[in-house]
Image (cartoon, rainbow, N blue to C red; front, side, top):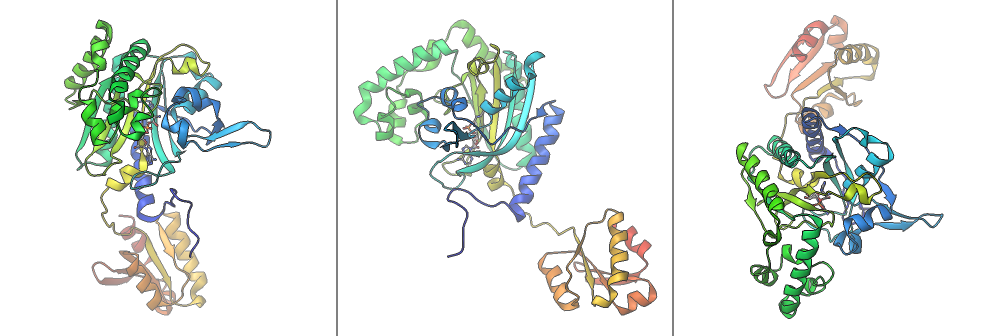
Length: 411
Ligand code: HAM
């Protein structure tokens, strides 16, 4: 058996890595337009950073974190998300003196879930956060940004936006109690997984994928019945602003998100083309989280998207290889060849030299790589101080000067 990557992890290369790089560029361009600045945080942090904020009873903390003891006995965890490390970085580095602060980042996160299509143990997230404003404009701005990035990456895919509100922390506490009571009465009919959550985490029963749980959920208490006028108005404003900019949304009263820190607006962008791991982007408001981490009492809102899931949906257009394949027919033409190569690169041309010194093998490789342009240097070219340019797509070739060659290839 060949050596393989660890279960739930994968190497990124070729087509997939090209798509990853395209996503990176799109994210950076839009982050710039929306005026976010990027932060790269460490891959591991103190375990305490995650436990309470994500929820001691959340699946991530209970089952999925990669936690280990350091040599000095302190507990460390590979980050299972970016939000808490980003907020920690904002506090540690005094970003919060002038508000609001708009941060973004990208990179690997780690969760020990059961691997399947679209679900990995190491995966990459795009992450945006706005700290220090409770304006619903920030919620909507972030949804618009997510919508724009998704449309740039996946222009032809149908993606639905689901929204809900969880009210403020006190409402959520009351609602959880009521929900717990409701599920206690239905406990024997719930799936085993949901039965375990009746007391500890009843909110998560609402987004259970089990059909019987879903049937029971239809008659469960609805959080909107617990809203004050203010909470209601806040949610209505989000909806009105979304209508204002023609963003279609579906209200899903069972959308609760998997992490504990959320309140008010929560949202998810989903695709029908991904099977069960269908959420591309998820996020919402988390007022109180910065304070919980030891910072000032300021509100926050943000989202994260899974890069691997986006890659799964991106088209496989076999692009023509834009590299120029450079062939030296014999080692004895090295010094002439090197001068030509050097001039081409000085002119910023992307040249691939295969070091083969064998015309047949090189042409066959250029074909396999789907290359369009090939430069061939042999006896004739060296003697006449010229180069041969072959177009493999058009099946044509001409022998020309270096200046002519550069002119053609630079187009
Ligand atoms: P999350 O919903 O846990 O939210 O993850 C966000 C996205 O990461 C998901 O929508 C999905 O695309 C991707 N994802 C999650 N788990 C996996 C996995 N095992 N394999 C592949 N992709 C996955 C958060 O992480 C929050 N921090 C989002 C946030 C930011 N809320 C406010 N600010």
